[in-house]
Length: 249
Image (tube, rainbow, N blue to C red):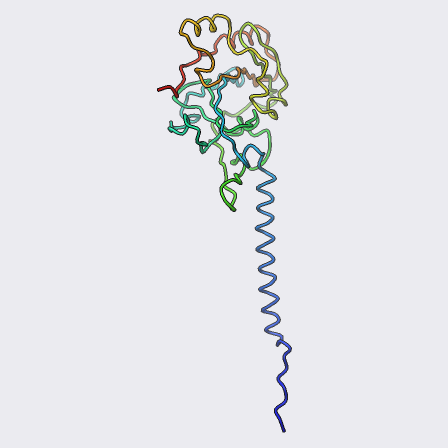
């Protein structure tokens, strides 16, 4: 008699191995997809797909009566030649050259919330040590870390008061607008230099363009109650003179 045909139905052990392998692959795909989606969701567009820019602002921050010195090492970024080129820098926001107050923005679309989170005060959520992830460098998102936890601790019960302009022409602004809006747009249509400073620039045959576009000045008070008008004016009078462009020559 001819041999009986072999049973083509997989054995139970074979079916179990196939099911386990399939489930493992599905789990890996799901975790990878979920991680990718989470990284995308936690990253603002300005971080996901950075675009080169280069402008400046002056910032004074008073925390419970004490000014923050952005010229101190915890805030400083080592000087790189890419800061003065059209190349995209590794980090979007810099203080450098040991200068206080004078901030550099190198990625378009930076907000006040990203600025403060970059130095340790997180008002905008997301991972505490990460500004977001870049999706412009291949299939794997690249983490953009914050500069560090450089800003000082804050007292309980403080509020946040922000003013833009100059010593002779300044106004209180919305704190939420500062946190959420593109800084260049936030500073638009506000005074940048006082008449005396304008005269100094003209005497040197210089303009704001020589400083790579200074878009505005901000004074922030972190304290329980709003500052007096005299206190606000006093702080604006402490704005440091605009420096020569670090990118000339």
